[in-house]
Image (cartoon, rainbow, N blue to C red; front, top):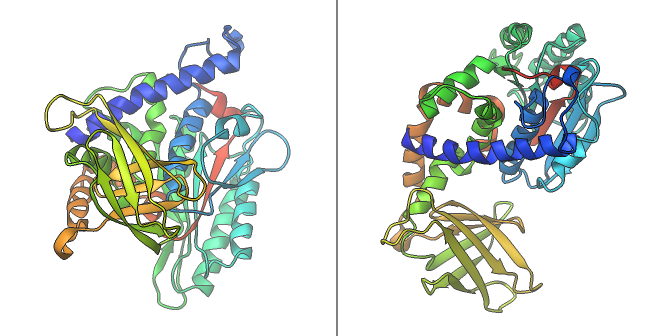
Length: 409
């Protein structure tokens, strides 16, 4: 579990800083009124936890959904707000924070809109995975029950496999919410008319599941700051091969530079093969793009140790200059043999002598996924689909009702 502890220690600090920044921005650096339940610098609200979670989840999901993620905010007054085809997190927090949490939780009507939208797009061509970040039992629970049951009955009658999943992610420890989510988990099922298979539409991640995983990963009791990690598990679950944590740690093994042959793909289709030369001083020479022009790249390593091996805290920042447009393309190092780029492409190192890198990643991911409470979370439908790179439409519903303004101590 050492891999998990290192990653979450770093992420705890990052998320704590984000929440403190959000608090400062929301309050103008002044104390909030007592009736709002907190003061500047105090424990985060459920909404603030959810916003941080959303950022981490979207960052990972867009790597497997080039069309972008749809985000739907519900609660308060008016109809659900749709933000379609979100392809990065730039400006995301400001966008969904145009309204603060307030009002009733009308999740049923929001879910009905999402599911009708999914059926209209033809689920045979494009399955849909829905994630709901919510704090409590909805005020229109009967409507939500009816929407979900009608959906699974329709799918069971018309489809041979289930093309729709709904994962509920509970933010906070509201007991009524926990009980209601258990009800949904147990009852939204139907038997497929074509083959007799049981279609199980809903799965849930409850507060207790999160706390168990936190203890398992960190080996310590939770604290106010670590409450923000409610979304960190989700984000960590979605990397290449399903194990972002494993892949980030594998980066540390890249001790011979980035020399080699690399296959470039876009949306799964091969574009070209590149020859990369690394001077071992942070400079790359790249040849093989369709434009025919040689280009350059750079990389840096943070906290680089003095020895031959990288330290456990090291991370790479890598870019290259687009040969046609002369702008910098930023890369995310997924593991020591794979890089995804801000232009939507992916580079995979071509192994010498017809070897295969996949065995290494599969072994690491498989071993980590067996870890008790953490493995339980990684097996939830929304995250499992993303980890498998399923070609789905990914939709995230954000509960923006008054229940999300509460603080869990």
